[in-house]
Length: 118
Length: 114
Image (cartoon, rainbow over all chains, first blue to last red; front, side, top):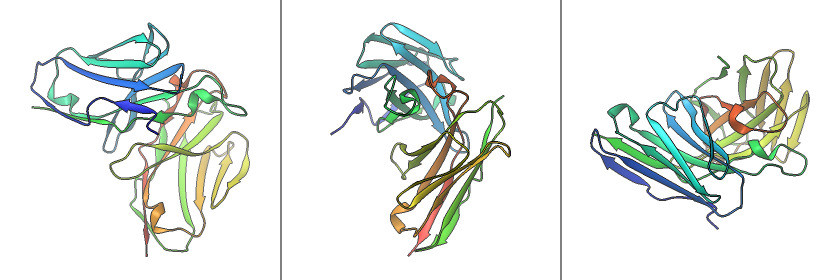
């Protein structure tokens, strides 16, 4: 019954390494998101995509890039990992519309990827 | 800077009591309001949304919205230990369209004591 799958639950990387976080959803959702969650700071949007090959910066895009080559897959890339990117990364997806409400704001989250950068 | 403020807690209530979780927001243009629940070690899940002033009930949960005072609250009646979680308030300035504008609060940790 898993709908949003993140490829890695825990990762440990070294400073300067390139890191790929993969996310796949099976709900045919148009929107996909990458958030990071840190204690006391809540969920902060890094990037989101509303269509294949389309992306928009969120609130904290610096140091990250994304790729969406297929509708179901959204990848987050850390070009050169730094210690301040140690965090929990959450992928989410949403539909354009759900009857009666704005589907775009009804997010289904993946289980999360906890990244530690040493 | 659009802000969504929540008391981080922890908020402790005895089993069977009413838990009241509050959220204030700074953007007067906000139109849509959401409550997500996040169990420890798990990802958030949507439990309620509200668009109009007043109350909206769903089982033991009631969302209350007061746009004039810029606050939204979540009441949990007959609280159960299984309600122990962090509750995230999220606010959007529009009623439809891009979720890019969804702003989350940092969450309130609720503990229901048996």
